[in-house]
Image 1 (tube, rainbow, N blue to C red):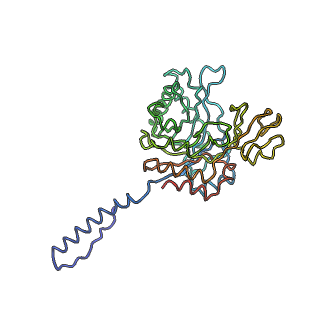
Image 2 (cartoon, rainbow, N blue to C red):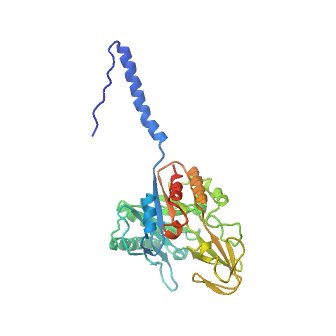
Image 3 (cartoon, helix red, strand yellow):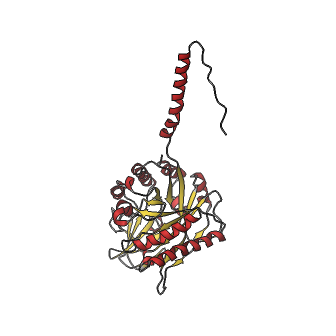
Length: 362
């Protein structure tokens, strides 16, 4: 409802003076809204990813979500893979909810599709898979009292599987649009830099995964999670990407396992402090260790000579990544998501660190 009209009391000494004041007031009222728009920053919603198979928040996780004012949670519902002997791709490793997500959180179901699941998929099969994915997600949501208005696909599609993935996305997008919901997709940095080569998925928005910038190698100076030198080469062309983009940033760590110089596995949620005192591991430097004999390290078998390399993203590096992404993207409302919500990762960041990372988008 319009508010009361405010009238100015103008001296009646001259009609000309009264008209000049009225025109000046009108100009001022027109300029003020423009100034407010120009001077304010586009709104940013704070989000996190949840990437475990059981949804159960620890007290530190609840505290971080509260202190960081997180409004949205991207929750991996299940993967889609084609297992050995299976005639078609199927949902695997579904999440189990031990507690419902907080009512204040906007939940976005995420489904990870393997490249193997897309190989040899016909156009009809791709459309059917898209509908099957939504049906399976609806069942999980219904069983756990979750309502959602956005759904996300996560897939590092290849040139040979692009059309199959896009077919899945189109079928899923059309079904979501029919109920007033939207579809988003994760976009890797190489896909964002080369849209003509990689293709642009038929979705409503993209989530730029601003990490996994380098190759997984045992070299001392490399960091496959994030290096500014690697990211810089990808971000220059973001302003021209044809989809509106949100941004995901890394706060996770892992340890890479190499055998004969080749990748043999990943020890997730494993840092230097978790393994440096392990009997049978000899340090090569501050972050690399070699197995002096066969042994088990956090459930992984190491042969003699295998190398473990610990990688992480310090708070200062993540903040610099956020600032670089903010400068590269056009000003627009967007979500900024951290990967991932986990007290193991939070233990390496303070609430102030997290707040500064989100606050870089201003």
